[in-house]
Length: 172
Image (tube, rainbow, N blue to C red; front, side, top):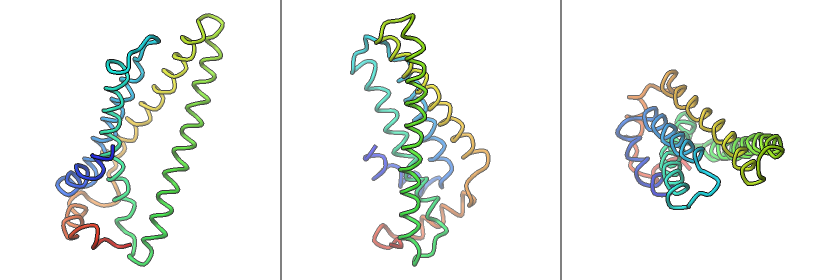
């Protein structure tokens, strides 16, 4: 995720604007979650878990940078610190709330399945439900990013990104 956020994502945003990297990043993250959803009870790390982790990290690393750039694009330089704090707090709170909802879904499904399956199989079933819901949410966000666009047109975002020399010239 760090590799994509630090290098690849910035280059993609500068070349294609905000919409395409955001949509592609969310779709790749959703594919990673889809691979997690097929993890069996007796999974091996390299074959069953690692591919989903790599895809999810790659997709999230591309999408998060585009989200932050979109959120900060219309902010005055004098308000950039406040805006950055609000954006990062929103991301953290959204993640915490999303995790709470997904954990509740997984626990409810696991509890319902314990009567008919082993504890391990019931827990795995609960995780499958949670990952399916997350994957569906990621797909919906990607479609929304493409269909409705962001607040700016794609060529305006590209021009804004190209006009800046680098992080040292960005508003703080």
